[in-house]
Length: 327
Ligand SMILES: [Zn+2]
Ligand SMILES: [Zn+2]
Image (cartoon, rainbow, N blue to C red; front, side, top):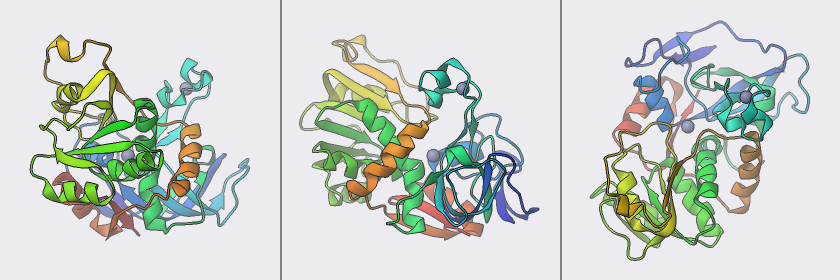
């Protein structure tokens, strides 16, 4: 199989021809049709997330066709179009797994981080953590749903029921979850890097009621804010923008340090919380919601061998929506 491989964090991926993998017990092999490029991939490639499997095939927004099935797999057939997300395996026995919070499992495996992912022509997945995809949508359009969409969904659930929602960092997750939030009847305020007019226009074109720079105050106080940008300085800014009892949800896996801030902006039962990974239940729920909400993704397609370019464009903020690799 063909793959883009991370041999050492901090170095570009290299194109490699690897032996064809075969699924073990409980696993499937997927012929990759598309794989989204997520900010977490940048954190892995740049060495900000420690102890990746090495060498590693990154990528955890995989859309593909099942082309080989291992022993003991039930409920998935050859030829099915499936999605493989970040959560690649959980232990099933720790206190988190047993209490319905497998997203916090003590011994998990993550696709494209601690097991090989989808920057390749083929990928092996634990069948229990792969999901049959809806029929609508092209392979490239569906890929961003598998992390940007899912993490967006988990953070939206954590944000609570409030109607005014702020979104800080208008990338792949934001452009998907804005559509879900509007479908739920919420008002969305989009915050971007100062003077990122293009991202602000993009947010308004998708239906945000206001778009501005992250250092601006929104025209009304927010019920909740979700931070997708990996920038700790946004936490106090978002706290100032939420009303009493409001929530600030940090949705990234990595963030720069949060600067100190006066207690008065947390006081009055404002909350800061984070959302980690996903459960299989989240995936099932979101894959049902996305077509109902009419989610349409904006994607930029790159051939697999240009993965480094896609990562660079994401790092530099040159993308609207999501980057997707196609083998
Ligand atoms: Zn566990
Ligand atoms: Zn991701």
